[in-house]
View 1: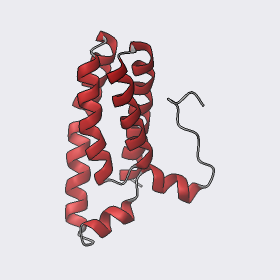
View 2 (view 1 turned 180 degrees about the vertical axis):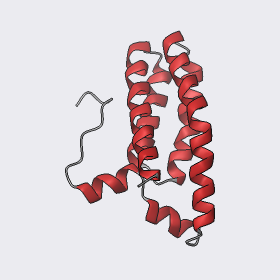
View 3 (view 1 turned 90 degrees about the vertical axis):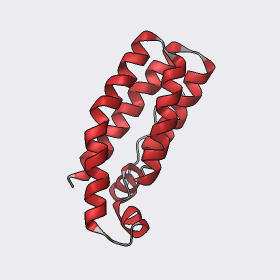
View 4 (view 1 turned 120 degrees about the vertical axis):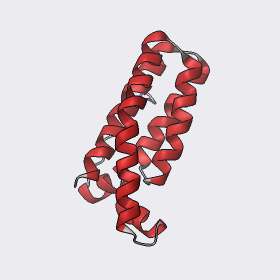
Length: 124
C-alpha cells in the first residue's frame, strides 16, 4: 500500500459500515428518519459543488484549497460515520499540506471515490 489508496475490505457488513454507518448516525440523531433524510439530502446537494472544487484545485495544484476542502469534508464524513471517506480526507489534507501535487491529486481521486461510495449507500 502506498499510503494513498485504501485497502479493499473483504467482508460485506464491515465494508458497508466503513463506507457509511447508517445505524450509528441514526443512533446519534435519536432514530429520527426525517433528520437522516435531511442530512443525506444536504450532502447530496452540496457534493457536486465540492467535487468540482476538489477536481479544479487538484488540477491547478492549489494545495491550500485542497487542504481546506479536505478538512471541511472530514467533518461531514464524520457525521455519516464514513470511516473510509474520513481516512481519504485526512490523507488528502496531509498530502496537500506537504505540497506534493502528484500525491495530492491521487489522494483527491481516492477521496472522490470514497465519497461517491458513501452516497451510493444513501439509496441502499
